View 1: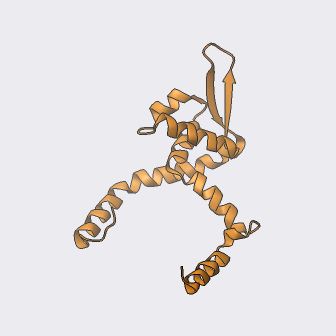
View 2: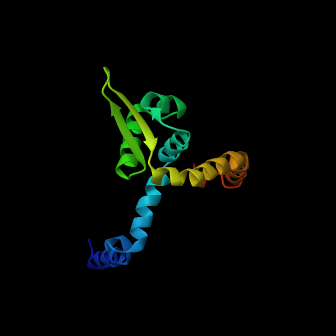
View 3: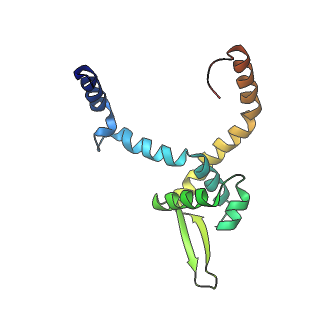
Amino acid sequence: MSVTHTEVTAGAAELDPCGQPDHPDCGIRDVLDRVGDKWSVLVIVELASGARRFRELQRAIDGISQRMLTLTVRRLERDGLVIRTVYPTVPAQVDYRLTETGASLTHLVKALADWSLENRDGIADARQAYDAQHPDNGIR
């Protein structure tokens, strides 16, 4: 690696605000990564109407695998957005519900989901028109 290249890389790292743990953008990025995640949004929308068992969530969220749902609810639980309750039955029953913080997100996430539904046809049309005008753009 050339000296110049190393200097450029080091300079870029110094400009990254997340190199500074107290920088406010780092917390924002971290939270937006979680709540902006496709599966997290869908789980929050589902839990907005009340507690759900794991299989209920999996059936309600089209296309999510068991592993991805497990990872998603664990991350949401870790972030304090979801509470996981295990009931002492045989077999053990587990349900998930939103915490107060998670519930405070529901109107925002629901608005985003509603916006997506309202605009998906227009966005699909725009993509098709763009792709027709730029056949070799590499975006898809």
